[in-house]
Image 1: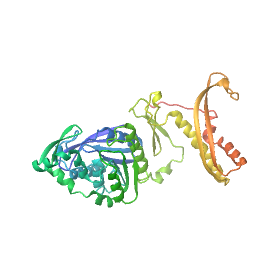
Image 2 (image 1 turned 120 degrees about the horizontal axis):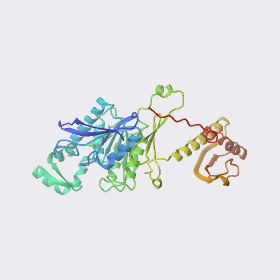
Image 3 (image 1 turned 180 degrees about the vertical axis):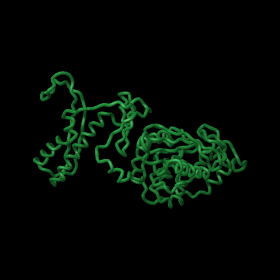
Image 4 (image 1 turned 90 degrees about the vertical axis):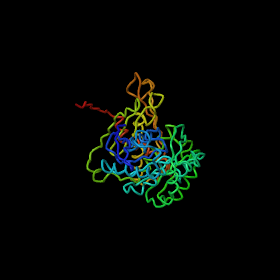
Length: 406
């Protein structure tokens, strides 16, 4: 995915390192991502979630908090309040240079910070937390055996995830002052809480506290089987897919005027992402999808394959055509389900085919019709299925005109 790397001034004047991940087309929205405690913007979960969101057309700004990654300053001088202030400044940077974030996402303590910052980012319409604690002070369990020393000595080096960090008394005092649940109760933004029931770092009860405190609209998604840091690639991809789909309900839609300007057929733009051997972005108007090949064919299975899209086009067209006919004739059709499969067959095995040598493409289409229809109505619907425009295209002469750009 294309990205821009830059710095912006944090709350204490230090330069914070940031990355703006961009989709291959104009962003449909901007998101601000807050990473987990001591992690940094380039932790695998953050990068993978950003990649998944950009594939859906959402640009993502992620940055290193003070003293982490490539950002200036000393980690020991940062507090929960300074992290919140830096998130607000990051949103302000987006507002001035691009567009204010409409979507806020936070992982672990970053989730708590994003909840606290949300009220200061008025353009944000939706907030997503991932494995977030309901109380910022929850993080102290990571160095519970050193809290007394920190209180006594003022600053102590502790080991977090195998790395040394200095924690100050000011950090403890600051997180103790935050009543996050009171802020959540006044959020007035759509909230999606994502949490694993087996998270052994931040227990699932934290998600319960946040959910109960929040006002509607609020949603909860269980990340069953995921660990706290989302180390499995599939878990990060799932988070990105669900968050993007959920957020679309609350983000600004494409204007009706812009959508109706072009009366002709929409262009489909397919472009390599270069993130893997076969992965492509597919853009159709305001819709963004991924195309790939299955692992067995050398891909990473991050999206449907070319023939999957072909079958999907035929299946969708079949179902839509049958629905239009049923509604026009007032038939009691409840639901149509179309299952398709593509394969290659020997031409000599097809009695009704004109071609008698070599291999032929064959699409098997199984249509399930639910509803209180009689045999004659069902037969007519099956006949209508063969009249869908995509079916006619696939079974007629097709001319493909290819041009090379200068």
